[in-house]
Length: 380
Image (cartoon, one colour):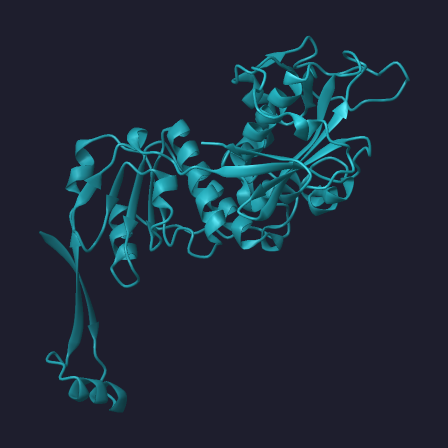
């Protein structure tokens, strides 16, 4: 077994002498910490995600440095967060942010220092991942140590999906064990055990996420409007829904009539917001698919028109959605002469299955509050 030795010379004074004699320390010249190192197994198989885990003082950071230099980045607070990623094209950055669970568009326009701890951590991760080359190993120390545990889980899930999709390599050092089931690493290493333990992430089950979906009053929009990229106004005819996880309101959906495309029962998505701390778990798109299946069971055809590349690509790759004739086109002026913004949009129609669950939730009067009707779903 190979070891890394960390030696510290003891400077004698009344404090160190007290400790030495009071506790009968034998070596009065230096302290020595021996950290077992045995990563040779990592060369024998392909991997994307490794985790070095253990308590404080077990040598995680020292071991992490065996793979290279741990680089930190200082963001320019005089410009917007997205402008710090000027080595990429703007659309690429928006897709990166969304994939890393940093999908609140107003956040992209703020300075790094004005973000929450969770948003700053996601931004730092996004920068390190984006800056890495194909042959690099991305090194992250103290992973999720400064964020709430709900943030840590959603962040871990977002990171592992993006890293595998991009076929990159990342090693994360952490003292937290609750993230392992969300990171689903290919290998883990504990300084206590001193061996690399391989894992088949494809056989590991992700934790179940159970949500409650409730009808709510229009006023609930106030809790979420600052996180939406469009105007904070919402048409008061919208059918509104709250998403609840572990007693917290984490998401909001607004659905509007869309008679200009179909009949009076046709609907379209107007607002979809998941709070920043819970982005990266796939909650928004999965809940929306579920809502669409409820509406479709009551013969309400659902449409989406959006300028979000991430949402557009989701529908493009999801069999529940079919592109309409206006997908990927720049709209002209409408019949009223109103000028529309000249940008490419995504337009899709829901063609998935009709839900067999209770559809009372979508029939409630729009003034109904959350405890009047709700559905519970399990995402995965």
